[in-house]
Image 1 (cartoon, rainbow over the protein chains, first blue to last red):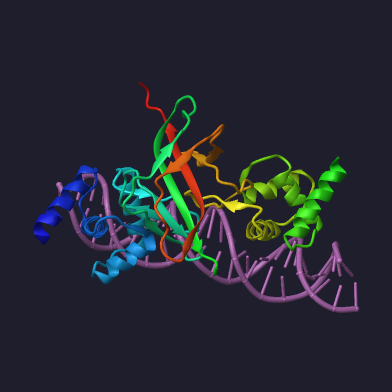
Image 2: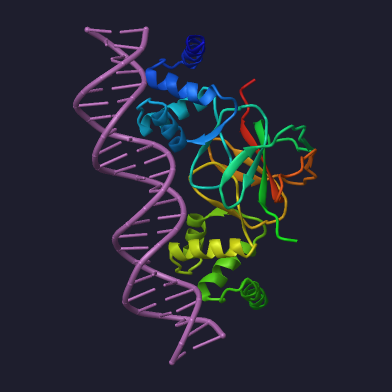
Length: 140
Length: 140
DNA sequence: CTGTGTGCAAACTCTTTGCATAAGT
DNA sequence: ACTTATGCAAAGAGTTTGCACACAG
């Protein structure tokens, strides 16, 4: 099964126009094997190390951007210094927790946006991101 | 009128629990005199210089964060390395143009979000940001 | 006067880049 | 073999911090 998955991942990487190198396949596996995830370059780097794949941080950045260009990942629109990548590239939405700078998917969702105006001339909508910012409830 | 505005701005700064110093008042004036704006620290710094207010970049950062804590500004949730501050702290929404990393308000808007689920235990919604990502329309 | 704010420069964090080495086809 | 990817370390951008001087109350 590891074999089948690896072959499948390799194909995805190849389809993106990238050589299925050890590092890229390993990173793709970490990214896409476990369902939807949001993570930063540094987090993925640590995971790779932990998984026994000695990949450099620069390579992680390269791979993340290449995957993004290929449409396999999307960059999350959240404040904060770090860039977060999302393995779910379809329209879906997030909670952002103030203070801890963490992002969670909004689950079980039929969230819908109404009355969106027409985009300006010559532009089209690439996607719509909704970020619901949460804060600890004040003691009542 | 400049007088009245300045007095008003000074009061706002004072109400935020901050001393109405030359720099803070000047920055507040630039920020709040012209309606809704989104700008980075560096942009505000340049504007201040251009307006003949020789304020340092560090002070701009300080002021922006202090105004944000006081609820006079909000940090925009957009990707990219720079932090953008928004002078409109009420629920309203943005276009983000891919490539040029620019943010525009969505105008004339009755944009509404439907079916937002309950937030998790102990959390409340601080606000909801909608970012509509635009890209150039492909030549048809 | 007394305490807070400011400005400068150095430090820090995250990300990108250049170039020699290694790996894929 | 030939080309592209990787890893390292150094550079770069944006932001924060520490400390002496200046200003507001």
